Length: 163
Figure 1 (cartoon, helix red, strand yellow):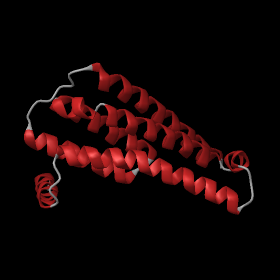
Figure 2: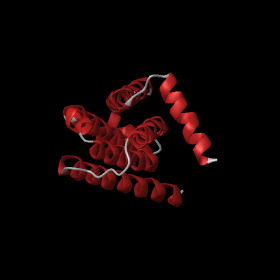
Figure 3: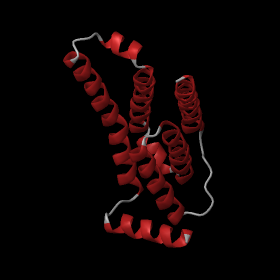
């Protein structure tokens, strides 16, 4: 069953002409643009409600948590954009980045980025066998962002438990 799904995804990626570089580029665009759209939405919502942004954030703590997630996604997207060539140079770095990002995006519920990260994992696993991360320029930020997203997940769960 898993191999059928894997073969289906690989054939989809082949038909869409998505290689590792295109997947990473799309992932970077998503990490940068989604937070910008979210910020625009918050500003639009607060202006329509004729409230200050701080009032909106105080009234809805989930939006405040999502704002932290959006800012973290934006910073991660910018960092990946700066290190794109180094990430693509070593397949282990690419695999570690996509795996850590898949976990991170699953924790915060960003389904689009999760799917892109899974596509990247499938594509790189198709090309190579054993993959090991080569350098710490990916490990350290990935662990930091995983920690931030884990903290945001705990905050979100605590908000739902209180209600």
